[in-house]
Image 1: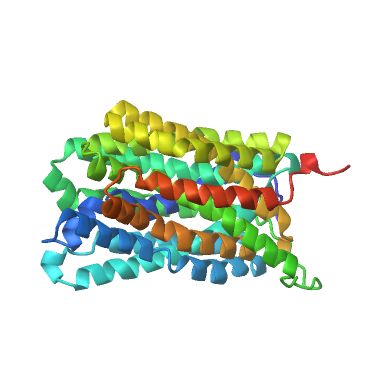
Image 2: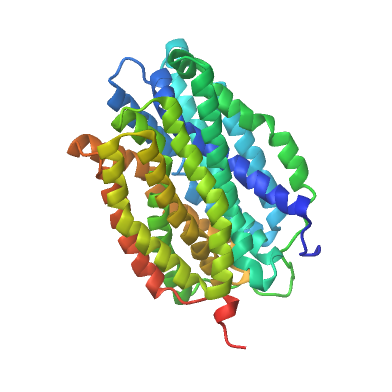
Length: 416
């Protein structure tokens, strides 16, 4: 096994690959309004948006399959080959989606191709999380596990930040019609362009998995089933909150009536807060424990969610939108690293990649894949701009209950 001490370029390789995968996966949702007009023309804007968000959710259907197939593979042959395979598959699928002709060109074959490429994206991303998280935790000194694991979420947020910046630039440079017809394709192809570079970086990584032929592979127990149930509750709440934040640009344009450039600014605000405060949350959990950080942050987010949406919907100004997004994004950023660190530290190494991948992918596929569709549907049915906050805060209440039941795993809290 290679040394577990990572150089800065090697750590950057994990972060860059993870960030690019999430950029490729999420950019579809950020341009849902424009993509809907290309693949579902001739319908009212709400129906087109709901159909596009349904396709966005399709990508989550194969995430549990990716977690179940590639996660355990990372436990058998190593974290590094599993991460390389996932990244290559993601690059292929996003290229295919960017080049898919419009409905006007090839009819119903266009949305069918988009669905296929979304399924491949989901499979790749579902397989990435397990080995990447296991790699970061195993490469970290015991007293910095929370910080290292937080880098995975920080790079996810950097992907949101970059996607938001790309959206802001394109929406300012292009007309609304150009943005709809081909501007979103440029956003996707920008992610494809850096795939070869990131693959080259990842090939330099060491391997953190200890492979020993004489060690029996652990079997899941009732304790592991309980851990999975509690963690799914925590991840479900965090996932719904995350995708509610990712919905802010659609909320700004479709519900508040703000321009696309202002709406993508909310994505930039959310991504910036995540990049900054995910590592702060991970660092803090290394010093005072996982439970105090995640329960406090999630509880506060539950309390301020509805007031933030009330402010944004009442004022309908860029400042209100950005302020509400920032407050909620900061609190969410504090809790995420603690949740994933707790799961990682609770699993033995020989089932860590698979366990993380499966549990995370199940929670994300069920609740993340439906979150934006649900909040859009709730908004349409209720006619209330507060609908996203109702769903988010209800989920957070369930998540906090799971966090209370979770045992403390941070080394700083362990005896001796």
